[in-house]
Image (cartoon, rainbow, N blue to C red):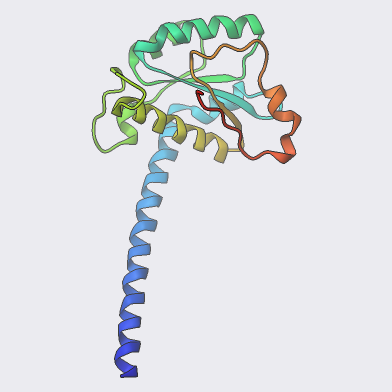
Amino acid sequence: DMITEVTELREELISTMEQLEKISKKYEEKYSRLKKISENSGLYAIASERAGRKSEITLFIVTKPYLDFALNQLCHLKILGYENYIIIALDFKSYNQLTELNEPVIFIEPDSFSEKKINTQKVESQNSLGMQHISYIRMKVAYLLIKAGFHVLICDLDIIWREDPFFYFFKDYNEIDIQCMDNT
């Protein structure tokens, strides 16, 4: 009958609304945690200080096994005179060594983005859990910077430039929302 059908629809609607409320609270908690991480680490302050005139910033992530790559990258950036970058260190050794070199480095505890402990220092392959977690952190940090109004270039440490890549991005600036390149 019609009353039973309306009652069932009403109960289904209430159930759906409750589920949406739970999802919304979970999202707010995660975003709040992300925002706290970025504010506590000085991410916004360093990005603001290092960004170019169009708010462009390059983001590098380093872990101890890739510290030599980071040091090589920094030598090339110095040769280019490029200063619009920040480095996220996921371990204290990398953070301390880059801090001693007066680099714009921020330490972020890898576990602050996950409920479980994931080893980001031993990455066997691109598909390993550690590498996936590093990629996840990189995307979360980029998200925070984009949300704060920066134009972000995410770059691996083994990519060496011959000149400032933002020149090519800003040529078609008004027409592009996102640009990507894969490893093929």
